[in-house]
Image 1 (cartoon, rainbow, N blue to C red):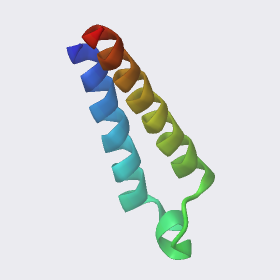
Image 2 (image 1 turned 30 degrees about the horizontal axis):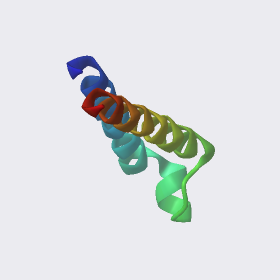
Image 3 (image 1 turned 60 degrees about the vertical axis):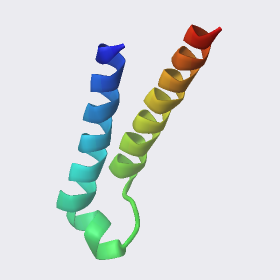
Image 4 (image 1 turned 120 degrees about the vertical axis):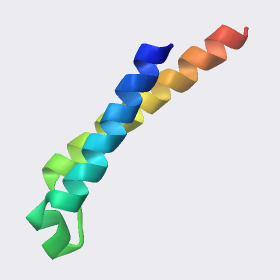
Length: 58
């Protein structure tokens, strides 16, 4: 389980770092396509982790 948690943390860090460092995201006040991709990747990993924990409870 630690591996999936690590991947989830890395995805969250990558998304937050991008938002902080991206000129386009900061200038427009909106997410650029790269930020949207990183957010989707994080959300997919989060969904996968939730499914895994729900399956483990059964």
